[in-house]
Length: 404
Image (cartoon, rainbow, N blue to C red; front, side, top):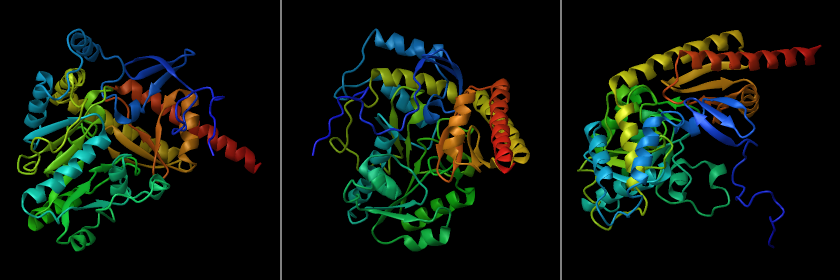
């Protein structure tokens, strides 16, 4: 039976539970809605707007390129794409980069690369990938199957075969799960959607060790935790390990859609002409913007400031947890990728904070996620913490009145 939606106010497919707010403009760490309300943005497009809103350097890079060439497809060489690839390689473990448009596409490309590597080595039976509970790798069928979140998969038919889910952080179970069909280990150094759950450094080191011993590829998903979000350019740097393959996106374009699959030349040995592609990936506009983002974010002083402000924000949140333990139960994460464990439902806190003027986003395990632009300063921290405090006091007062 068909259902008409022609009486609805929008023809946009209703796959999101949207707040009834739209924005007219942004400036740095702030957004201004169409009704003139000003918000401090600690959501940043879900860890995307690394340099905040309307950064003049990015506006200039985009406008300058837009006056020349927008798009030609990857049938031709794209100079800025090549420069961007060289930048990524110079700043990482990788030798090569493939460009796409999103994090999910980067994960999909990495999955294909891992399987193709073993096929190129004469072992096509090695296609299975080990991943972990609480993970989130995107909304495509293979990416969803790599996480096996039942709610995300429901109603979409058979999941994509070839993924084995293990307890996050358990080295013994990881080793025991490896079979002659295992190709790679896929892990987020810090789980984002799963509730800002950082992997222990020793666990990441164990992953690298097991992979080396058993001939597997290590595949890091740094779609959310990469591009300076933790105070280092790549989150895995804190553990002193390197992957063979990595998916990045979100902050790479600072708001312009772009993703990348990064890999060593050995891991990418099977990726020859015709094995993968993208019409829009790494086009002239995306390349110009991402080049400028990476140039800025990779600066030592910039990353040191992210670490400094991240420590301050975490310290101030910890104080709020002590003052309001029924509302805020603890803080975890790294740099400017922090999560507050909530007492009330996190959805309630997201709404109350939005009403105060602070934009946040929920995550799994009843976490309130704070992923602000990487350019925030001390006064932004003070402003955000003040709103966290106001909301906590309101909830405590409401609870006390109910008791009376």
